[in-house]
Image (cartoon, rainbow, N blue to C red; front, side, top):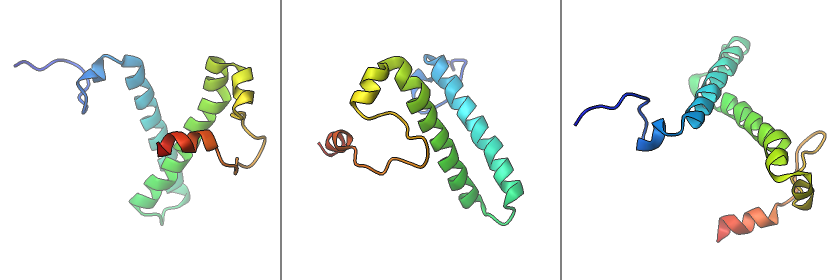
Length: 106
């Protein structure tokens, strides 16, 4: 058996989805960039706290890009409005997404 050139991962298809690999690389680098800033601002934070706080920020960035840019481009504004997916101007959505909850519980 010979080794294939490319990126090693837990899935043999890792090298077939190059755009996905690029996105993962970008998000890992962004995570590391933000973590270094947080570490400078909070030198007393331990590794796990730094990781979790950075993870929250990066997750929020992914969610914002998904709901503000990706979904409107893919689904269109009519679908975004129909299902209440439009972002609020400030704060966060504190309602219940019944259709998502029903999917997750079935």
